[in-house]
Image (tube, rainbow over all chains, first blue to last red; front, side, top):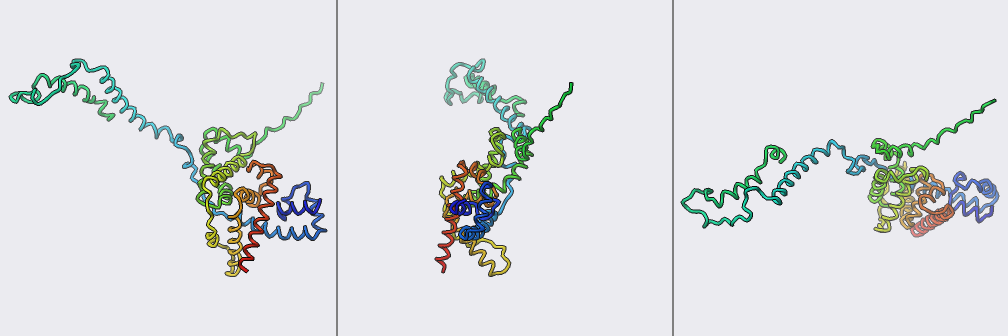
Length: 153
Length: 195
C-alpha cells in the first residue's frame, strides 16, 4: 500500500474502513497508523462523510398513490362494460341507417323530384299532394326508431 | 448395495422485492402497491439529490414506479435485482431530464433550509454549513451527485453504483473522489469569501 493509493481510497470512499475495498483495508489501516498525512486525510474525510450523510438522507418523503400509477387498461371490466354497450347500441343504429342509405328503401322513387311550393295546390290540404307523400313516408320509415332502438337512444 | 441419497439443494429463494415483482408480472395490483411502498423513498432520495429539483424528482419517481408495472415483463431476475433495475431507471430518467431541461438550481433556496439544531447558535452554524454544501452541490454534475447520494445515502457499494450508472467500479471510484474533492474546494472557497 503506497501513500498515494491510501490517499486515493480515503479521498473516494471516506474515512470509514468498512466502506474501503476489502482487499486493501488492512494495509491501509496499518499505513494510517504510521503516516501523518494519511491520518490527517482521514480526519478531514470524516467531517465530509458526516455532511454528505446528512445531505443524502435529509430528503422529505411522500407516498405515491399506487392505483394512480396504473395505466387505464387496468380499469375493472364491470365498470367499462356499460359505456361499451351504449356505444355498441348507437353503432347498431348507425349501421342500420348506413345500410338503408346504400341499398335504398323499397317503394322510394330512384330520383325524387325536388319538392317546391309551386307543386302544391293551395286548395289541397297540406301533405295530400301525391308527389310529397311518398318521400315523407320513406323518410319516416328510415328515421322512426323501433322500441328497442328508442331504449338504446 | 448401499444407496446414498444426495441432498437436494433448496431452490434459490428470490429476495422479497423480486418475489413481489414476479407477482406484478402476473398482474397482481396488491403486490404492485407493496413494491411502490418499498421503492418510493429510496427513489425520491436519489432523484431529489441528483436533480436538485423537488418537482422534477417527483415526476421522475412517478414515471419509474409506473414503469415497474407497464414494463414488468422486461424484468429478468437472472440479470439483477429489482432495486438495481429500478435505480438504473431513476438515474437514466434524471440524466435525460437534466439534458432536456438543464434546470437552474436556485442557490438562494438553500438559505431557507429547515434546521433541527437545538440552540439558535448551533442552528445558525448548522444552517450555514448546509447552505454552503447545497450551493457546492449545485456546481457538481448530476452523475457526481447521483454517485454521492447512492454511496452516502443508500450505502451502496461502488460495484452497485457502477451498475446504476453503467460504468466500471474503477470509474466510479474516480467519480466519487473528484466529487468529494470538488465539494471540499467549493466549501473552502465560500468560507474564504465570507471571511
